[in-house]
Length: 487
Ligand SMILES: *Cc1c(COP(=O)(O)O)cnc(C)c1O
Image 1: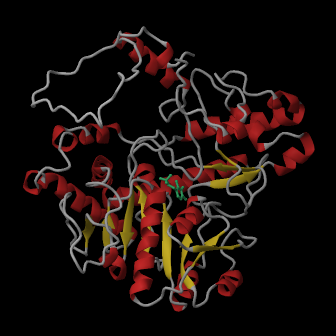
Image 2: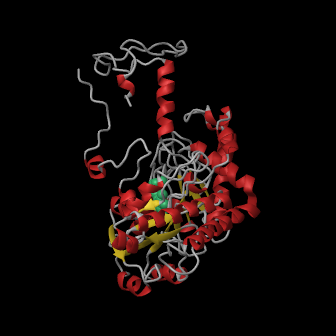
Image 3: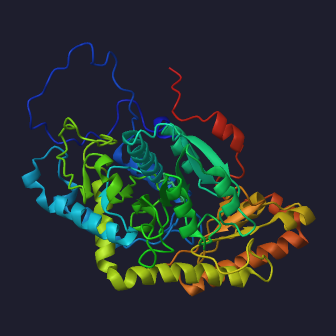
């Protein structure tokens, strides 16, 4: 497929800008271009076809079943898109005077109140643009908290080895030292290892519960208490809240701060590269340190342009303006539509779907852990690989070929969590029907049979996709991210 720069003709284009309605400003020579920008010379038809055919080459939630574990790819009500595109929300300017956007600040307050209620926190900030950004900001709160107490020696953040990769990365970026602790045989935190790791240098713990194996840690209260007793704080990675929203609250589990990926669990599509929002919540004791433009108990309602006041303990601004506001609009719409009764119902359905699929697969692919799972589960193809040579990668690639007019499937998450060999991590979210899950199960089981009968055929997969097997190392190490002009 040609790139957009290779299409059309120099000089052609589709200049459909409206006439300028403000005085034109002549930029000083030092900042103006010396040569004209090299824009693609494609007309509107070509541009439209180009992006349409690009879209058809990708796989999204509108194409088919998307059981990507630790990512929550679910159906998000389209009506919330419509709400978010209302002119009163979509066409405002970040520097507009506060009194002209009171409806919008009211939405933020509503979303904050609801999310505080759901997570058991006291204050909520919509500044972080992603889950990882929320983790980073949350850890800056920990840092500020310890600093004020003279706890600068608290440099260590304890993270179990089943954690999402962003956890250690955020801790390192916030200037902490990461202490990894191994999980027990049950996939949960090994309490003895945790107790060995805590000490006067402990700044805190980062944990996701249910963890990335899909297991709810039964010792959660003892875990968070162990950290508190040592003078540390607990951070809850709430990227995927599907399993517990409306049922259990991180605040009640003993966590002091949390981020919620509104772009996973609260009605903004995730994974499309669009704007995200990793809402950062915290308990009272951390509220004074919240980023500017937070809502909730701290009463921070800084207009977009306002600077930090002297004596203010806030970690400051971590993003421009109001954050990705429209994501908060969708979250508020989603929560208010579902209400107190149906938020827990959605969580129960996520757990039911995952357990149903896990049980149906069991005859040929037993899960890594016994017992019920939460919203996702992990299988290992280690035994299959040892016997037939078919790896989790081969299996995932072969799944891509299993497309029909009526059923399409995206492979699950591969090789994660890192503690399971040949892992496939499966999450059939709450919005999938029994029929869809049944069909997916049939596909998985048929593919296992094929791996046993004709392993070679999986090695050759995928054959029906636009790209077969790219050189993943080269793609990661030597990415070509921009068009190289040859003139
Ligand atoms: C997705 C995810 C994150 C990171 O969120 P981003 O928005 O991608 O930065 C962190 N932890 C867990 C468990 C996740 O699933």
